[in-house]
Amino acid sequence: MQSIFNLLLIVIISPTLSIQAQQLSRDQWGAMPVSVSHNTASWTIKGRVNTVTLNESDLAIGIQSGSTLWQLMPSQVGDMIVRSKGEDITLRIADA
Image (cartoon, rainbow, N blue to C red; front, side, top):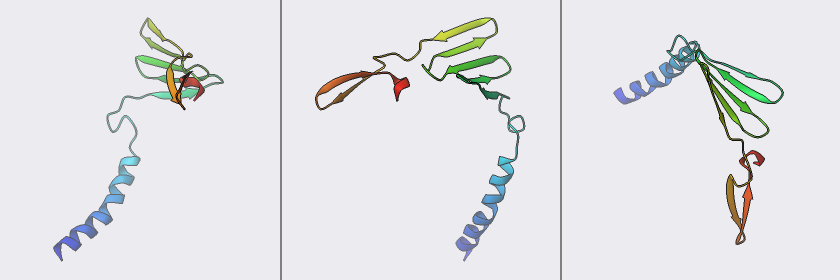
């Protein structure tokens, strides 16, 4: 009887807790505040200090941290080698 009561208690309380957790803002649960935006060709994730930009067409990534900018290589032929029916084919991840 006690285990049935415990199970019912969990079933009743769990949804209430998850609803409350979903209502907290990022700041309230300790996450860093960020904004995500999209324009015609890229996505931008901007935090207090760093900004990351993803180019949709070639998956190139730019990371801005203060005055420093890192540009990561875009996707290119040879990103991945796939073997099909005994034949190797080179592909770009951006083509997936």
